Amino acid sequence: MNIQLEKMKQKQECERRKRIAEEKHKEWVQKKREEEKRERERKLSKEMAEKATRELEKMQLQERAEVKYKEWLKKKRAEEAKKRKKEK
Image 1 (cartoon, rainbow, N blue to C red):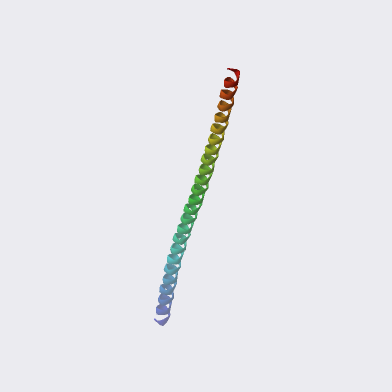
Image 2 (image 1 turned 90 degrees about the horizontal axis):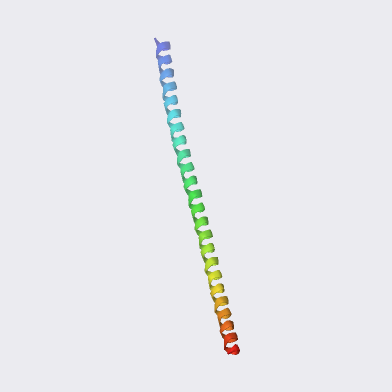
């Protein structure tokens, strides 16, 4: 009788440990997935920020080029007007 009772207690303890191990594993898997999700979001955020920075730099470069072109065009027109005035 005692042997059967002892075996039953051991079986219950084994099952309890197994449940605990399964719960811990589930928690670990969930934590790991959450970490991976945060990492993906962080990478995506970083990539978006870098892309926005590149776009801003590109726009600024285009604006500077446009300003220089307008200055050059203004200077060229002034030179042409001066030349025509001289010719007259």
